[in-house]
Image 1 (spheres, rainbow, N blue to C red):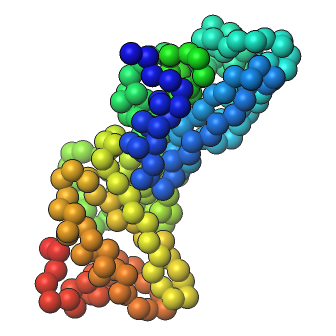
Image 2: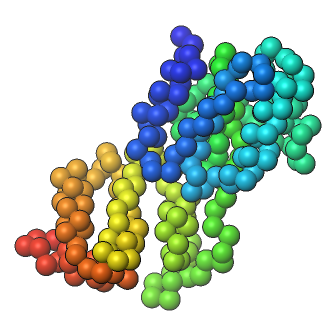
Length: 228
């Protein structure tokens, strides 16, 4: 049975809505009255590419041609004609595959009245040169170390973990610094009681600034038992 446009969106929201940087953007295609929806992660997807090479062409599609309908061929044609390069697009009806694409940094496009799901490759991972951690030298495997930007670090992790049950809970610590902190876990593997315990301990941290993980570790270890 073919799923409706709203049913597809509802399914994707139930699967991805727990992610703090997921974006569901609905819009009209020009003056056609056709609704489309884009789903992407703002921390990974190149939003400038989205606006310039997807949103603007979609808006101009119906205005320039006055077409009552938009299908795969006309959408691809418009995108190719109005952009500097060919958009790699593939169609399919597998919503679970769409979830994996979104978690990979790509953007899924749903069109009202069309059963296909279009994927555009918009992933933008941290471009800064990532060096091997000085305290953890590896002979084999990736030589990637975290940098100072939380969103960049989360993007690097998502690059390797494309699992819809991978959750990120963001908190802030430090009365004055209000630093961002993220708790990462796989929801169908992690013990939910342990996850809540970790959150509770972190929320009790009462310092002006938690400038490094050592401070957080010390506060957690002061509890009767630890998560180690």
